[in-house]
Length: 384
Image 1 (spheres, one colour):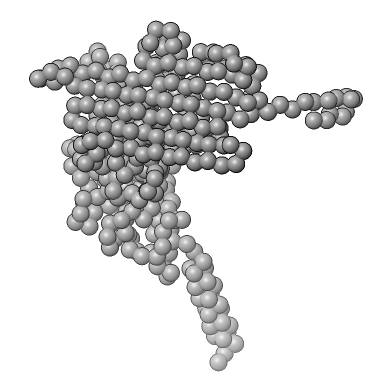
Image 2: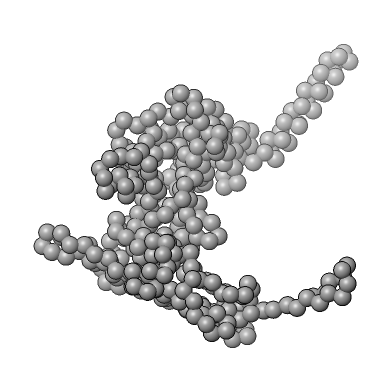
């Protein structure tokens, strides 16, 4: 064999070995870029990946501000269907196969068209998909997203494509804040998001709707200002609309630490009743001043003095009561909180012409100050 041919075969073998080793190390990956018909990037679109065999969710992500997306960590080698969805746009479904030989599925640049007619449902594998798209609404089938046995609604929301929940319980969808959460289309604790997401159990939920809703100004004036706000509507399972449901949690620990929490609810076609409570001395805040400020429309003093929908009372370590949410001079320590909230709404009249909603939140909080003393004996030495 000539030296030149031998060298070529050795190089070819070496290249094959390197390629095989790279493929084995390469994790399964689906990627692409999403644009509209004008070539403009579409951000915060939902990318949901389903197992082709049984339509269960394998992973999800959203497009970035440049329209690109990548999904890897949740995937294994296998066959998938990729749903790409955005409000007001026609959904796209792609079929991909990931293997050791071809671990990367690059979908390239995908163009989405504006949807003229509302889509009733997106069909995956001949079954109703976990996600349904309408012109101004994304609807999630709650049973398609696995949660832990004791999860609340917040735990469910963290599983939904395109929905983010931060450490403080604030919700974002499509990159925008969700400032109102409804239960069966009606306000729950004044529409306060955390009241619903932190207190209703995930296993009571049938579906979650994310809606691009018109602003209150547009609804009141009839003149569309072009602005939209993100609203989350939680629909309960039918069996949760009959009788009472809720849960109770109690824990104890060393140094006389404790935490107790309960919620009890009753919902039907016309009536909603909810009672929630939290008591603890382990720094679990429950309701905060910011929560109450939002709940009362931004004026805590009015709520405290005139009963405008709720009340707020804070007691600092010196025993002095405040209504401004501040603990003067207390910046750290062990917080004891006692929270309670009640929500009641009803629809009255033979023609259901009377609707009302009464909600109240209360908070009593004390702070045991953990104090340090600084001793300075020279400009360059500081002791604590």
